[in-house]
Length: 372
Image 1 (cartoon, rainbow, N blue to C red):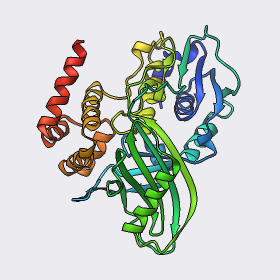
Image 2 (tube, rainbow, N blue to C red):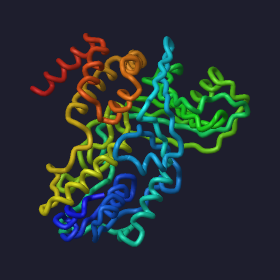
Image 3 (tube, one colour):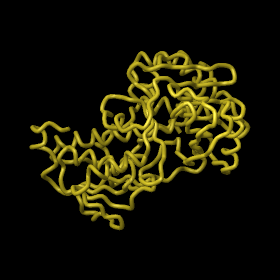
């Protein structure tokens, strides 16, 4: 919450606030502003399908996420990254990995703003509105790296999963079409979300992911057969995107909240909307696109750009690179790095863990491109 002393001097008594988009970013901002005492908020656009059709949003516990952690359906104190050569298990003392059902979060936001925010599903804000936040998804450049996936929630006949340990990346699957791994979140000894995930410019047909999941479960888990309870799929750009309308205030994916190297977005969205609310509470001038809080540090974005360049050139070494990162860091260091909260000592560990030649070449090429 914003301190009462700041609430007397901030933006609450000013012009209306408009938010385009009723998905994660738009509803999260409307919720945050409502909790902090802002008035005259208008939300535009149809409700996201994620409010009624569940999607799993993953994030690591961190400061400022108390409500999100409380509402998370599952938490894992340990997680693994697995390659053909090694299995790395990390444990977190302070930052467990969390899974939040999109329906839970979006309906929590709707309950919070009920009666406080006007939701106009078919409307558009007046361009004369002083503050217009825009969460519409930006266009993705042709040929951009994508994270595309398809997953199933299953109940197995045999108890075979460790409910204390999430499998973030298991590369023991078909690598012939690009960077490919299995993501497995065990809810109980016989329940789990299992996703086939790829990093490549072109999504595959559904059959590819389904067959990959089937082969993986048959090869590495004694399920005794299973029933599919739910299916989900998605595609996340792993790129540096341009806002839909540069004259508006971009938030969410439109405002740079998707971490390019990983596709994680939820915690960055929450951090961005918190900072927006805090900034509005102490500003009589509001915000401009150039003064909007940055959800991801510049240095993290620079590292992501270099890392993605290496992955594009050497997809066959992706498993090795992710394993090097996990092997070099503690669980809490890894969680803070993935959440954009790493300390300098963590960056030093990461840089020394990477193959020098690959990254120096990528850095050199990045520098040459900037000069042209």
